Length: 137
Image (cartoon, rainbow, N blue to C red; front, side, top):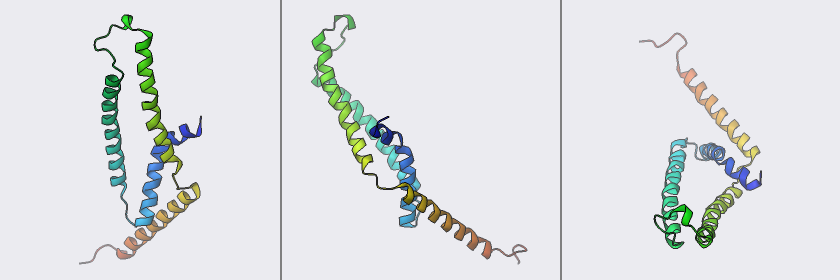
């Protein structure tokens, strides 16, 4: 597995790590915003993929209603010449974006410990505010 493949395979984990990093930096848990933005980006990519496929078929002058038996070598070469750059460009951009992902494993572990300490502190505050024998009225 190449480094680029490994980067793309770990993208979902990187999102949750980025959520934790944001929670530490902003002192607020915004997981919903991050995952909603990710879902929106996936839907946009699907829509752009359909648009790109239409443009690809149009610019390669692929014949409508073609019988597969009637295809020529020139007909198959033209779509390949268009498809390879259209597939490789977004893949390469995705790899480049992930290449500059700046959260290291050590920083991730530090973020997890910080969040655990904050949670323990919040739980201790809740416990100290509760009477031992229950609420009195």
